[in-house]
Image (cartoon, rainbow, N blue to C red; front, side, top):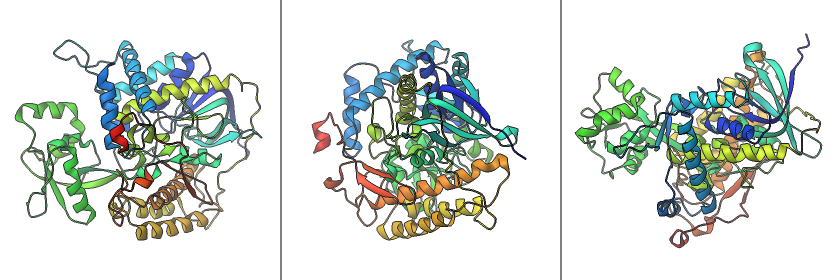
Length: 528
């Protein structure tokens, strides 16, 4: 039976449903164009932000901004871009002022001013969905995009996908420009709120020739109770860590103290945490600020301030890491004409360097990059409204006897999720992973085992995870040093010859090359 596709057209198509996607959609409508937003889940509830929230890199205008940029440059491995950092600080600050005007209930400090250092995810995303809807954005929930379409000149002209709640009915949306704000990838690790973050946006873009950057810095991990998945680790800045015999690790105070614990866990040892460094007078405030962190502990009858509890490492990938699509313009344009990227789908090296952007910087990046991309896509679309769309299918056909989705996902996870593969790397293990992943890629080149029509998106998730794992591995081999999140056991020191960003791309043939655009640093000390 032939199932006819649902065909629509718009000026700007936004793919994603988190903060970057909604900011992009709102920004495009502010520019006076028509916008459709498609989300794999339900816009406003899917993704890491909706499940928890964000701290924010929010600094009021003044000299403190330049101080903050300098501080970040010194810590970030010398590969940031100061112009991007200042633009993100300025734009996100202005947008938070608007968010307040839309009714977001920022807490009030003792000086009577709003405290804009964090956002509660459910409240934030509920208001963003409502604002997008009221701005005229057509929101299509449970409509995962499967691939991008392009014209004969290689200009992106829209996307195709399926409607999950309509039996997998196909859809085809033509657009003057597309914004990819589909998130990063956590490889279905179980990290809180990241079940939709499987990297299809990166795959769709790479199929059209897009370049990626910073993929070697996608190896972010966080600590969670052994039986939990909540990785809001800021509480652990007041933590002490112990081995299985109750002996304390010699750790620094603050979040950097987690490193000894993570190295022990990488060696296969058990580690216990206790929040005994938290002053008595702030403990209730900690509970109020991040109740989801304490809930599984409370259910287990554990008072984390007095009792040590076992922790494990949970892979967060590029959601808290930095890698993503390379940006070549201030408007978040990618290397593919007509395609823009925002949020975790884009590289965050420009503002976080080799360090995790988790929490504050990623939160502000989503706001600012969504704004830049939405405006850029709107402007580009004005020249493309009458252009016809053409689709050259790149999705892999289903075939009997082929690997199943679960088999492919398990194979990828075995070479990405274990800490000895990604937290602490070596050339030998990386090459072993590269060889296995290359074999998996060849095995699925003719398709995966059949799935029901409404689950076709799961095949794309599996293919995207293989592709992302190959890019991460290739970029990690291309950086024979230790820098930030990229830790090479066999190369424990940083090498000044690698104070540049590394580009990666390709599908059947993966390539890497130094970024020809040098980092732009405001701080002379950061160069030394």
